[in-house]
Image (tube, rainbow, N blue to C red; front, side, top):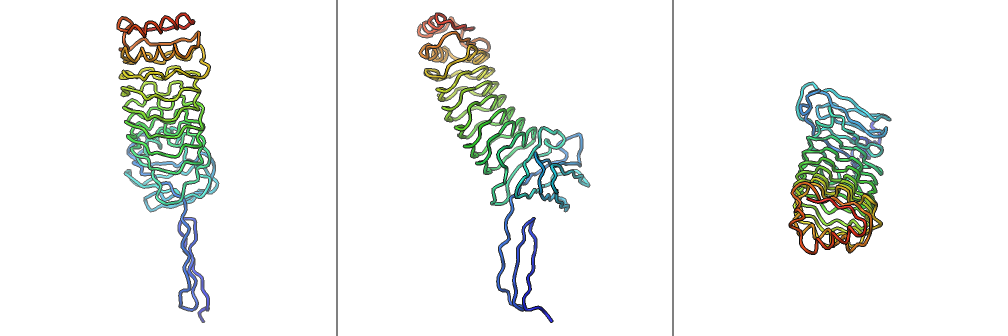
Amino acid sequence: MSPLFQQNKVYVGSSAASAAYLGSVLLFTATPAVSAQLQMVINTEADTASNTAFNVRSKDTALFDIDWGDGNVETAQNSNLLLHTYSSPGVYTVTITSDSGFIPYNNDRAADARQVINVSWPTSVDFPFGTELLKAWHGCRNMTSFDLVDTSSVESLSNTWNNCSSLTSFPLIDTSSVTSFFKAWYKCESLTSFPLIDVSSASTLNTSWNFCSQLATFPLIDTSSISGFNLSWSACSALTSFPLIDTSSATYFTSTWKGCTSLTTFPANMFDTTGTLTSTAFSNAFTNCALSAQSIENILTSLDTNGQSNVSLNLNGGTNAPRASWSAAANTAYGNLIGKGWSISYN
């Protein structure tokens, strides 16, 4: 005899969906829970060291399921590493399902990081990153796209996309909780523009966009909380101008725009009000740029207005306007700064 009440379960990822029957009559079905998923398109031939092997790494041990995209599915139990070998080289879509614990951690492992060409999030459930994405996609130099994802809980983006040199654009992610942007986009050499991200929780932007050599424009982000700009835009050689950012909390700009070889236009009044400057605050700040005589006037007169003493400043190298071309206002400001104990180098 058939039971009067029967419950059947089917499993989708790690979540169960159910249907209840009275005899043969369907009473209800429960909508299956949707789990958070991270999807990566990989090309196993992108790395010459191994054209069939790919490893998935989590920063911490976690429970997660992996669909390797070749018909093989497995579960990692309290693990931070799963290794897989494909029967033949090619392009595969790897799907990771996890409700907690899994944090991507490529960490510049060349044999694996170089195989990643796309990262996306196929479900509507926010991926549970926790508070940091340290080195998550570091070294994914063949990754051409990165989809928008909820990062509102993330506090550290240190080295997250370091050396993702094929990324041409970047989404406007939520960075309102981020306190560390150290080398976040270092050597993202194909980025041509950048979104208006929130850096209000951070105190420094050291090396954040260093060597973004194709970055032609940069937005007017709110930098009122930032005290340090060491190497922030150094070697951004496609930048021709720079916005009037808020430097009211800043204490150093060491090598900030060094090697911005196309940077000709720099705004007036940028440094009228800053924090207490260190003695090397502007060391190599504008070395090897292409500053016009007007831009040099803007910089010098602003620093003169600032009123601080005994600081070093580099305006030499590259095609920066030579002193012979400076305006009377620039020369007056230069003389005032020298009288305040500044050390200034120039072409």
